[in-house]
Length: 277
Length: 361
Image (cartoon, rainbow over all chains, first blue to last red; front, side):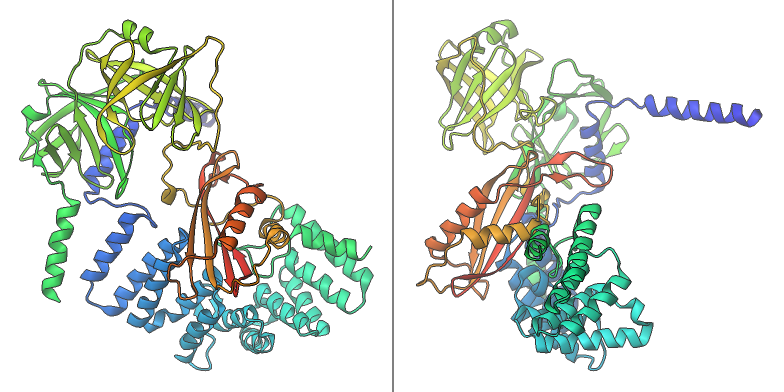
């Protein structure tokens, strides 16, 4: 009983204190004054003209060339997010010259955010050459996966497959096949399909679905593989599964900044199903 | 190298610190009308507040609106530094330049000292309502129901807002607020009425580009049944700062990029003799209703040098973006914030020998 009284009192106080904090219309200005007193130097968000100038100043004032390279990549990303490709490119190129270790990150950006596959490949190769026989990580990807993507973007699926094989086999050996990123398996499967190797592609899509059963793109491309193999009924089921996951997830595969290169869309799925009617 | 760094540092300090003089107690006493918040270099948004510093060490803070609660706190200046309530600013953070007060810091704030011009609210209200008042660039149609139609004379765009007369001491300000959905947000730059006669109105304030006196001429009379009909692209956040409203991942409703690629494949006609390569990038705003406008284009060659693309290519792409890709989804807040916002979006086309090879946000 005492506990209930205490609980009631606590809830009542919590309610009263939350409702009694009436907002004053001048709260914004008062809060801004507090911030101004704390942060005395003008600054603006990434992509702003001020951020561009501030980073430029930071570059001029930094002695260590590798740190200068880092600052240039921050500035480049802000510019890239606002579509200033010319400025971003200049900074990325300067950053890699100052700090060759950044070639991997810059290659990643060229690959997904510039769709400049040739430049992406050159930078990724330079990064990979620094530590031969090791599948270096770049953010949450591996260098060989990204190289595979760049080759595939250039239409060179033979070399794409070699790069995908390297990263997938190394991961499978080290951690087991169930720990291989399903996106890697889908990417390799798609390259197999491009090379008319539907059986190998199907194996990859099956494994990708095992690792992530709700994948829209893995199910869709599995349908494509089955269609290539003439297994029409199974293909229809795969396409329907793909549609089901697309509708039930309310989304398709994407990174925060871009759609997965192998993403499947409603119209692709509907078209495939109509084709098999 | 060291000399360059020192010179850069000096130039830098000059640009980030105020140029004016530190304020004294005597200089601050009086009423200051909010002018602008500097959100970026060369970008300001309105600051619809006023501060009244009294000799008894109290300062009243208020929104430039009628009937809203004010806040009164203590203030003092000591060793060139201002203190408001418990907030201690640094020496020289508040500076004066003429009658302009600059509070430097993260986002610098500017205020102007009020010069009172005594006017009768009832008389002014009666004189200005029901008429259209125009400058070279903008016309204001002030309706009796509190709405105001702002027409951009250059673009022809017409936007619906709301207006009030707000007295501050003996002076009167025209306060325009709100996007068309409601009048509780987006207060414009306060305009102080300094002179009025039957055919012209002189106001003092910001016109979006500069602070000064502007004469508005009476160019029309509004009929009682007349209403404001907005036209052209409307922003929900009148003072949108595009770099702060980035929505990197453009949401296109059904099918996303897949659909966009299909639309472009259907609509784009390659021009045989054009063999240019590079990027054509469109940056635009998707407003909170899912409509796109404010298109800007950037074209770069394969080495990312700015270049001119053949207009037969760019005009087609612009037309496709503006007229065919129209089913946008407005940007949403994150987490529990379900508010719809105006957002700045990108759509980029990579071309190789005049053919589109990639489309990406």
